[in-house]
Image 1: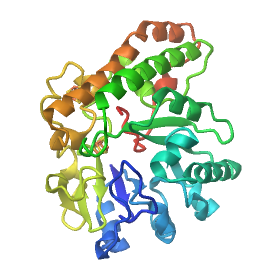
Image 2 (image 1 turned 90 degrees about the vertical axis):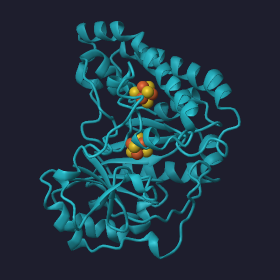
Image 3 (image 1 turned 90 degrees about the horizontal axis):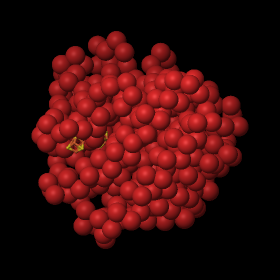
Length: 360
Ligand code: SF4
Ligand code: SF4
């Protein structure tokens, strides 16, 4: 199974949409031993460790200790990128995928995350490329009201030095709406939805010359539309993906250590087999016409509904716009595949769950 391992709850940034900021206090650090963790993980035959925080690169010695202790396990990293260059080459090259937070252009990124962040992240990704890192580098955007989705995604996809293999984004629609949005409806109608339409059109257009741009939400959704494959929840939370929090408790999702409903066990008493499929999305998702494609988007939002039912429905409409934009091009993409210009496998992403939730 996949485990988000929260290495610390502390972070060296205080981004607009996170509201977490720098947590301080005795409860922010890991409170179990490496042996406790190993005893739990030994009960699982297929382990993937996704290092998460807070900001995991604030704990580089712990990353080294983990990689030495678990030499065969697959590792993923989700980081704000500011301390990436503090990880030694032999260790950073062990990550299968590295998701680096960057929100688009310098103006958008620094606007949300603090002045100077964009340049530092770009410098560290250049360093990673120069090392000859062969894994998957994903630009992971948080998308909120200052984002021009078309402009910001295109900026990251078109970057050449350094290049990102993939671009993924999450909408800032988890935490309560009042502090986060002035006018969500206007933004979705005037900026986000038209931007998605345009990005999809260009993405399909570029396929005709054999290029599949690494726009994460589009790839697996188009793959599912063509193959008929369905999903019960694309991020896997509560099914085959869990979070090990700093206190050793196991939750369905890394963002919700403080929500009682999301805690399903702990590393001392739980067995991975009992955890598997322990929580899934509830109505309205299973009865939704788009469920097989959408997968219910986000277990946390499905269960917690911090935006209420009305807000939940608004986010569904945004997802449905994305699905419809892709549906319009299914036959065209089928033809491109039939002509041998691209292969269906080029859309089959990710090979392993790497923390990209797929439906923004
Ligand atoms: S579109 Fe909304 S209701 Fe339908 S499956 Fe997705 S999250 Fe659930
Ligand atoms: S999509 Fe939702 S449930 Fe899944 S990992 Fe992200 S916040 Fe958690």
